[in-house]
Image 1 (cartoon, rainbow, N blue to C red):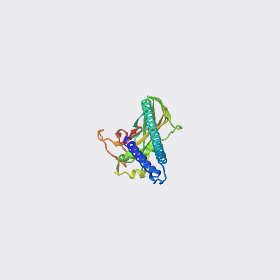
Image 2 (image 1 turned 45 degrees about the vertical axis):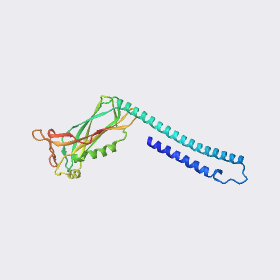
Image 3 (image 1 turned 120 degrees about the vertical axis):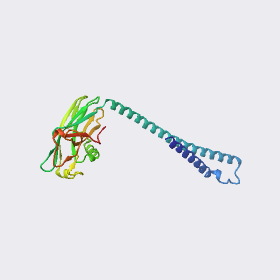
Image 4 (image 1 turned 90 degrees about the horizontal axis):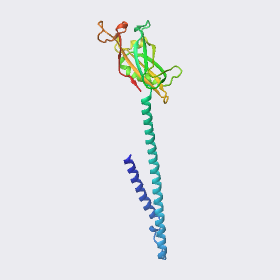
Length: 261
């Protein structure tokens, strides 16, 4: 900022000098005087020339000063708005709603007759913030490969980042709401699993809501890989496309990609 103003000042001074020299060159000082000119005429012409040159330079300097003042006022207004925005954001952050989301299995993984798979999960939402969350709604889906969950979750959340006051509900501070969602994968998606006939799917989803302070849309996104435990309950293994694990051996594990804003 200071470097830019210094350059502007140097450019302004240079322009003033150029204008002054050019003005003097075009005035009678640069023109030969007639032989019959008397001393009074010479003095008067030179005084008028200096007066005109000084007036021009002064006017240009005044213009530069006005421009610099306007620029300074604009910068000051921008900084003032930025300070006000930071104060407002800090106030909202300390008083806003925050949704905590937990995901649980609501039934076993089922291999459908069409070659696909389905699963029911319960999305448990709790407002751990200091003000109500409005237009709260949750959505989830299955992805065939947990390694692709982070990118898939970002795209899924972006599609749902919009107000949904018709279907959403309000959650007061410390209030909870559970929603059971049925997820499905088609046979074509399951056949495209990178490790077919083994696969490790993931449940991805997002709770979308609005703040009461400014009606801004916020999200809490989650990602859980689905795995199978061993017979002794230990270890985590991939699933078989032709054999669904029993509910007690099916686990949801935290996966990469979740976020809250």
